[in-house]
Image 1 (cartoon, rainbow, N blue to C red):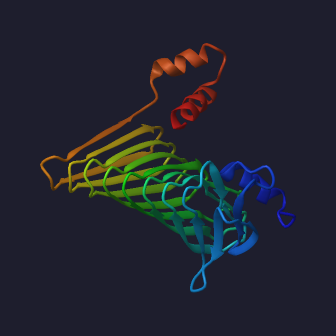
Image 2 (cartoon, rainbow, N blue to C red):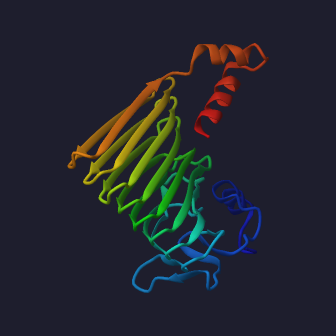
Length: 308
């Protein structure tokens, strides 16, 4: 941790809520290299031998544990790439705090591509929090392209909170999931784009086992000349339930596309999709303005609450 400067610590605080050395297992990566790592028999972190990345191994029956695995990029022109595999033992309960921050003061692009694969055991419960942030006044792009692959065994639960805090020039999020019997997937996405930024999201969920459930909620705000595209595909192959809700607030000259696909291959599959795109309600703005806020301040308050 002594190797981190003020900018590094600011990024870690915002993307992983780290104000110092975290408790339990952790792995901190900066500019493609390991900065600091701690692991134990409950949550073991091992470097891959054949490519860049780590294996995170959570033992069976572990309860109320957490692990931090943030990544920061501050080097101009660097595109970091990692392959991280998570092996969650049967009956384990764990919270995983990831996230990536890019600070770019240059005129060349910097970024991070993370390919994360989750293998979730029977009866396991996982909360995965991934925050993304771009900082720096340089004209160089800040690019973040996360890929998440999830395979859920019987009776398991996986909650994914994916949050784009702002400042990211371009992002392309790809998530695939395969759900077995009685498993449940909950995805909560929040994205903010401004200026000329672009954000793309693509969810593909295979509901394979009987009584499995999937609930995807995406909330986004697009401002200025930014663009967003949200794609989702639910494939119901059993007696299952799947729901996607996509809500967006549109400001200025921004554009938002929502493209749903529902593929029911079983008569007992229940799948639905809801999409809403609109502007901030005038009465909300007026109420805050009458309390003494400027219009910009009022918009910021509404947006912050909406994206929580």
